[in-house]
Length: 455
Ligand SMILES: [Fe+2]
Image 1 (spheres, protein in one colour):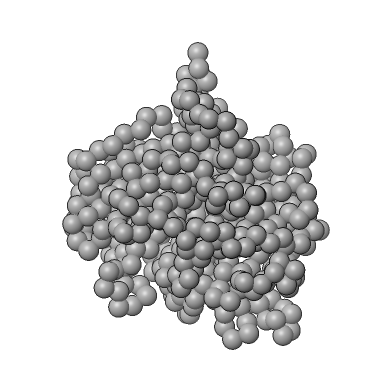
Image 2: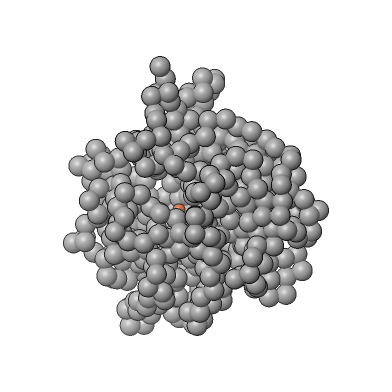
């Protein structure tokens, strides 16, 4: 009997394998999608999202599942197709008895965390390895190490500079110093910079921030700790190690990084950052700690914070924008690194639930200049996904566009892709695309306009 057949969707099943976390095992393509409302005719592109989906049916931790991509091709006011595809990684191939050539260790990733377009193709990313290149039909083209120039892992949260097209990233998954490297890849896919950054410990660094002039690393004390390996992920929060933000000029050297102390905390996701004169302003989802009792403890959740780094005083001012839990923050991609007025977050189910992360029933739009929040309520039994902004083709304002998310109704066990008018955020979706199968809760994704990649 295979491992898959021994897994039952019961209370004894780990949370990340049951209910709507339960992985799918079949790849499908459907061109017959039921749509309510009107898909804006100007939308021409691909919505794509990834998430952990263990191909054997089992993974010891949520973070370890093989990547599965879910995509919806939209054109001429129609949802042309939905399809789901495994990222064709060594692990997923092995589980499905498919052949796979021998590859370097850094090519043994999952692509389960984020998917973004760069240099004409999609990248499916996971922070401990190299990304996978993916085409517009969600087929895996192979691993990407930039002609061998990238000799370390790469974060799943690189930022694409909307001005230069550079991909700005970092690596933290190294067991010996220097633990962190800064990575800069040109719009042409050539590695321009790979520079060590000195941090005292190996810490889990899930995300970072960029401005037009700087990148900001978060040295937060979720430290490598082999004693935690039994709980899945060998990292443990150690408040005594302190916390620092590192500001490095984007085209400077790692040794130019200047560090600023903050109160110990953890941040899975930054929202955006910008230069404000000499100051740097960051918005993040900040939580007091992470992995409290084990690396499968989600009792602590993030809240939207504004951090202002003042290089003259050397101080960081921390302000809570909202005391309600929310994460997965995004802005209009054209404003990455600039002063975005609007951010879009997903609410989280609240604290005290250490069993599993609970995706919330609302999406939130914030005016970051005032803290005002608009709520898009998904329905009492519906749980959200990351809100992704798709700009209008005739964009006249930062929020002239649409917010897209795959959401799941726990009562009907059906999933749908919703398209919300970002300027009428509290209103009903403009369009609801009913998906032909349940889509497990996942991680991050992108709206990829036609022409950015071949499709
Ligand atoms: Fe993430």
